[in-house]
Amino acid sequence: LVNGTAPRIAQNLSQGSYFSGRKPEDGRIDWNGPATRIHDLVRAVAPPYPGAFTSIAGQPAQILRTRVVRPPPSCPGLPLQGGRQPILVEIGGQLIAYCASGEALRILELDIAGQSVFPAQLADRLGPGPWRLGGDEARFQPV
Image (cartoon, rainbow, N blue to C red):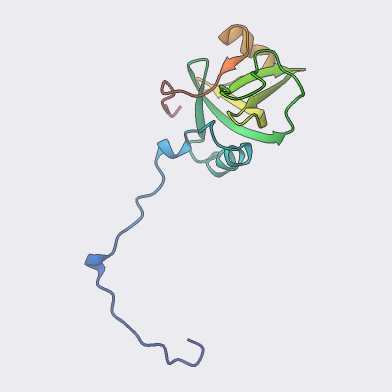
Protein backbone atom coordinates (compact mmCIF):
# COMPACT_ATOMS: atom_id res chain seq x y z
CA LEU A 1 0.00 0.00 0.00
CA VAL A 2 2.73 2.43 0.91
CA ASN A 3 4.63 2.09 -2.37
CA GLY A 4 1.46 1.86 -4.53
CA THR A 5 1.88 -1.73 -5.73
CA ALA A 6 -1.25 -3.23 -4.18
CA PRO A 7 -3.49 -4.63 -6.94
CA ARG A 8 -6.86 -3.00 -7.55
CA ILE A 9 -9.61 -5.60 -7.60
CA ALA A 10 -13.14 -4.72 -8.65
CA GLN A 11 -15.76 -5.69 -6.08
CA ASN A 12 -18.95 -7.50 -7.12
CA LEU A 13 -21.55 -5.61 -5.05
CA SER A 14 -24.20 -8.30 -5.67
CA GLN A 15 -22.15 -10.67 -3.46
CA GLY A 16 -21.88 -8.22 -0.60
CA SER A 17 -24.17 -7.55 2.32
CA TYR A 18 -25.01 -4.60 4.50
CA PHE A 19 -25.40 -4.35 8.24
CA SER A 20 -29.05 -3.62 8.93
CA GLY A 21 -28.36 -1.54 12.02
CA ARG A 22 -29.34 -1.89 15.63
CA LYS A 23 -32.81 -3.12 16.54
CA PRO A 24 -34.63 -2.35 19.81
CA GLU A 25 -34.27 -6.03 20.84
CA ASP A 26 -30.50 -5.51 20.93
CA GLY A 27 -31.04 -3.53 24.14
CA ARG A 28 -32.60 -6.42 26.11
CA ILE A 29 -30.59 -7.14 29.26
CA ASP A 30 -29.54 -10.76 29.80
CA TRP A 31 -29.20 -11.05 33.58
CA ASN A 32 -27.39 -14.39 33.16
CA GLY A 33 -24.31 -12.52 31.92
CA PRO A 34 -21.59 -10.94 34.03
CA ALA A 35 -22.19 -7.53 35.60
CA THR A 36 -19.53 -5.88 33.45
CA ARG A 37 -21.23 -7.04 30.24
CA ILE A 38 -24.58 -5.67 31.42
CA HIS A 39 -22.96 -2.38 32.44
CA ASP A 40 -21.29 -2.14 29.01
CA LEU A 41 -24.62 -2.81 27.27
CA VAL A 42 -26.34 -0.09 29.30
CA ARG A 43 -23.61 2.37 28.30
CA ALA A 44 -23.65 1.29 24.63
CA VAL A 45 -27.38 1.74 24.09
CA ALA A 46 -27.88 4.76 26.37
CA PRO A 47 -29.80 7.76 25.02
CA PRO A 48 -30.07 8.97 22.33
CA TYR A 49 -30.48 5.26 21.49
CA PRO A 50 -33.58 3.49 22.83
CA GLY A 51 -31.77 2.22 25.92
CA ALA A 52 -31.26 -1.06 27.76
CA PHE A 53 -34.46 -2.67 28.95
CA THR A 54 -35.69 -5.46 31.16
CA SER A 55 -38.64 -6.18 33.39
CA ILE A 56 -38.82 -5.54 37.10
CA ALA A 57 -41.50 -7.59 38.85
CA GLY A 58 -43.13 -8.04 35.44
CA GLN A 59 -43.15 -4.32 34.60
CA PRO A 60 -41.18 -3.15 31.54
CA ALA A 61 -38.34 -0.85 32.59
CA GLN A 62 -35.39 0.95 31.04
CA ILE A 63 -32.08 0.99 32.86
CA LEU A 64 -30.23 4.10 31.81
CA ARG A 65 -27.13 4.21 34.06
CA THR A 66 -25.34 1.63 36.18
CA ARG A 67 -22.15 1.06 38.12
CA VAL A 68 -20.55 -2.32 38.81
CA VAL A 69 -20.31 -2.78 42.58
CA ARG A 70 -19.14 -5.41 45.02
CA PRO A 71 -22.19 -7.35 46.22
CA PRO A 72 -23.17 -6.55 49.81
CA PRO A 73 -22.36 -9.52 52.10
CA SER A 74 -25.99 -10.40 52.73
CA CYS A 75 -29.30 -9.56 51.22
CA PRO A 76 -32.80 -10.72 52.18
CA GLY A 77 -34.22 -13.05 49.54
CA LEU A 78 -30.90 -13.71 47.81
CA PRO A 79 -29.98 -17.41 47.63
CA LEU A 80 -26.42 -17.99 48.75
CA GLN A 81 -25.52 -20.78 46.33
CA GLY A 82 -26.57 -21.94 42.86
CA GLY A 83 -29.79 -21.35 40.95
CA ARG A 84 -29.85 -17.63 41.55
CA GLN A 85 -32.76 -15.68 40.20
CA PRO A 86 -31.72 -12.19 39.12
CA ILE A 87 -33.27 -9.75 41.58
CA LEU A 88 -33.34 -6.07 42.41
CA VAL A 89 -33.18 -4.91 46.02
CA GLU A 90 -33.16 -1.56 47.77
CA ILE A 91 -30.33 -1.33 50.30
CA GLY A 92 -29.69 1.90 52.17
CA GLY A 93 -31.43 4.03 49.56
CA GLN A 94 -29.62 2.38 46.64
CA LEU A 95 -30.97 -0.01 44.02
CA ILE A 96 -28.73 -3.06 43.68
CA ALA A 97 -29.32 -5.53 40.84
CA TYR A 98 -27.97 -9.04 41.38
CA CYS A 99 -27.11 -10.98 38.23
CA ALA A 100 -27.63 -14.75 38.11
CA SER A 101 -23.87 -15.08 38.73
CA GLY A 102 -24.19 -13.23 42.05
CA GLU A 103 -22.34 -10.18 40.71
CA ALA A 104 -24.00 -6.83 41.35
CA LEU A 105 -24.77 -3.53 39.68
CA ARG A 106 -25.97 -0.35 41.29
CA ILE A 107 -28.82 1.11 39.24
CA LEU A 108 -28.19 4.84 39.04
CA GLU A 109 -31.02 5.79 36.69
CA LEU A 110 -34.21 3.84 36.04
CA ASP A 111 -37.38 4.57 34.05
CA ILE A 112 -40.65 2.69 34.35
CA ALA A 113 -43.38 3.66 31.88
CA GLY A 114 -41.31 6.64 30.79
CA GLN A 115 -40.98 8.12 34.28
CA SER A 116 -37.84 8.29 36.40
CA VAL A 117 -38.16 6.11 39.48
CA PHE A 118 -36.14 6.65 42.64
CA PRO A 119 -35.33 3.84 45.10
CA ALA A 120 -37.85 5.06 47.69
CA GLN A 121 -40.62 5.05 45.07
CA LEU A 122 -40.08 1.50 43.83
CA ALA A 123 -41.86 -0.24 46.71
CA ASP A 124 -44.84 2.09 46.35
CA ARG A 125 -44.99 1.32 42.66
CA LEU A 126 -44.24 -2.43 42.61
CA GLY A 127 -44.90 -3.64 46.14
CA PRO A 128 -42.28 -4.80 48.64
CA GLY A 129 -38.97 -6.09 47.29
CA PRO A 130 -36.87 -7.89 46.39
CA TRP A 131 -38.12 -7.69 42.79
CA ARG A 132 -37.51 -10.26 40.06
CA LEU A 133 -35.46 -9.07 37.07
CA GLY A 134 -35.92 -10.15 33.48
CA GLY A 135 -38.23 -12.62 31.88
CA ASP A 136 -40.14 -12.85 28.63
CA GLU A 137 -42.71 -10.28 29.70
CA ALA A 138 -40.28 -7.42 29.03
CA ARG A 139 -41.14 -5.84 25.71
CA PHE A 140 -39.48 -2.72 24.45
CA GLN A 141 -41.92 0.16 24.22
CA PRO A 142 -40.34 3.42 23.10
CA VAL A 143 -41.71 6.43 24.97
